[in-house]
Image (cartoon, rainbow, N blue to C red; front, side, top):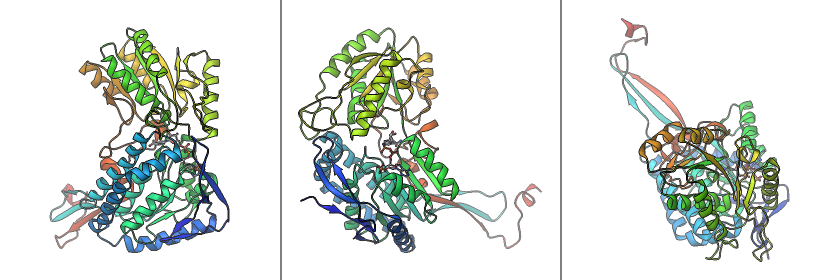
Amino acid sequence: MIQEYKLFIGGEFKDSSTGEVFDDINPATLENLATIQIAGAKDIDRAVEAAEAGFRLWSKIPAPKRAEILFRAARILQERKEELAVLMTKEMGKVLPETRGDVQEAIDITNYAAGEGRRMLGETTTSELKEKFCMTVLRPIGVVGLITPWNFPIAIPAWKIIPAVVAGNAVVFKPASDTPLLALKLVKVLTEAGLPPGVINLITGPGGTVGKALVQHPRIKAISFTGSLDTGKWIMEECSKTMKRVSLELGGKNPVIVMDDADLELALEGVLWGAFGTTGQRCTATSRLILHEKIKDEFVKRLLAKVKALRIGDGLLPETDIGPIINKAQLEKIEKYVKIGKEEGATLLFGGNRSDPGLPGYFFEPTLFADVRPEMRIAQEEIFGPVLGIFTVSDLEEAIELANSTKYGLSSAIYTGNVGNAFRAIEKIEAGITYVNAPTIGAEVHLPFGGVKGTGNGFREAGTEAIKEFSEVKAVYIDYSGRLQKAQIDSAE
Ligand code: NAP
């Protein structure tokens, strides 16, 4: 018997007004895990109304008290870590150690952002006038709409929800349709921890209708979106019509540079993990390998041997290195890009085909292309799968120019034994994140996360920026002089 899940509005599970549902499919086995209700326009109105009511109460609770509930949520997540990780592997396919990491990231951001409840730092500063005190305070925005992708089914929602609610906002949350169960589990944990009714509301269904309605809803004050560039562009345009604040975390085409002075074994391990971890389905996945010509042949030979040894299969099995692709459409997209790469004249060194590990799901071989040139589509467009393009350069300057040659700018890495090369890369690579002697994946929650150029619109998540994404800054002037003082006029005398 397959369980049907309802929407979560105003602290209760409610039937959707549409009567429509969709299936939640395990991408390794194609087993149907659950049936999920599809929200309609009426449900989104109800969710916004519930969130407005929730906001009125929640925003008045002192932030340290709000945080206590979130610390409780972190403890519940910790207790359920294994259960959630196993469910996540079933729901989206990545291997168990990685899904455990995903849950751990949710625990980490929950503890970190809840800690901010005792800070909520503004600034105090000076005034150009006598007997005048100046400071800034953070205010919540109101009802915020959160839209998330499937590749980090609990970490990314937690990155948004926890800072949003500790800052005093109420949330309407639309998760990816490939991973609704983990979203439901997170909402359940928050409710069990004591989050009052209306503070978190969950609406499920296709982005094209449910997500769209959320973006266009006149009473949603801000949208925080993580997903593809095309959807992000559309959301930004739509939000301008209702003057919503919008924060975007979009795609990547992340380069790793390996210099001739690098520790090659270390770099090999980093490239393998960066390119094929999560089956290449990370916004920070390594998709471009930029090799110094002096080590290129040796590096490619050793990489090839490691790639050939990767085992594809069900992420629940301990021997599996690479789990399935999320769905059929994404599998076909990867196949399309392999075809494009061949047609463009890149050399297919390994992989390029669907794989059959004895399960009916969506598996694809780890794939290596050599002789990739910067103008090729496989060098420019995000494939979001286990496909790595290899480039050759003769010096650091050329490597950095190549690294900067796409519209994206999320993560980047350099392997080098030379401190000067490392600092030049930090200075010149156009990216929100640069790793030195470490792969392009591996962000920690207490540092800001996000990218430049087509990867976003300047916001950062997590770290010191986490609360700011979901706060308004108010400047406060307190004049205790007892007389009218005119800034810029009296102070100029
Ligand atoms: P996507 O197709 O853009 O979908 C992301 C979310 O947006 C899903 O919840 C989706 O709903 C929803 N959506 C789709 N169309 C919408 C619309 N018109 N209005 C409102 N919402 C809409 O992206 P994806 O394929 O799920 O995720 C992969 C992408 O996310 C990659 O580009 C990856 O790089 C990026 N990503 C970025 C980061 C980062 O932090 N920079 C992190 C992870 C992933 P449905 O699921 O129902 O379609």
